[in-house]
Image (cartoon, rainbow, N blue to C red):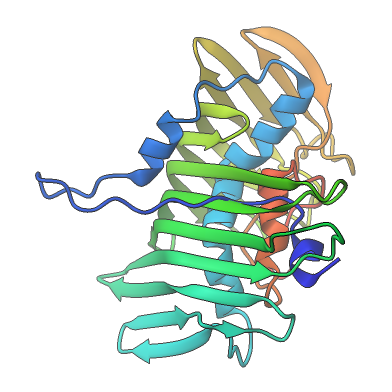
Length: 307
């Protein structure tokens, strides 16, 4: 498989960030996209795992900032090209990197008064497929705006739609998928590798619908358990149905990334495959792996600082 497929077997989809409305506030293309996905369902274990991975606060952050995190941590990055203009950094496409991935669009990072604003302006990666019967290339695109601010407590906002298309890994048939977030959250770094996460907002997928997700006091610490969160909860809500995921790595650290959950107040026991992500240095291009983590259920270890 090509470099792009090796890093991401799931596809992301596009949206354009809204222009300023007549009241001076920016409109949200993510909201419009989320409205079009319909209502989500999460009554089965499989559905719960998919949502748990894409809708918890650390995974929302990880997906939203992945291109920037990868660009920032890649020594000698030449594609996309890096343009520095005072407090503004532009990662510009229009080139093909060493893995044969062609980049178009750009990512603009602006820092003012302690706030970083990141605009993904149709940031697109394209690569030819290894599928013999494929007629279209593999395309991945980020569009939208995210922000981050603070040190002792880092606040972040996500107004983002991801998209992509390409041949299915198994059948080579054309596929496309979309994911969108309208989300606000916080990260509080602690001693060593400890991180405490919280956040809430709308999360949606083109094939799964839209729901409200709220994460409360989700604690990560790879030195204690690198396969799941130590404690805290994530609550999913849609059409009057409520699922509550409880993280228990502090007392039951499991390689299979297990959590317990309830559905409309009924105890559903334990389910495996609910991994988590956290912020840390990574090799260039590794952001696509993270997208798989978020979109595909991410059965892998937590990515902690320094991993």
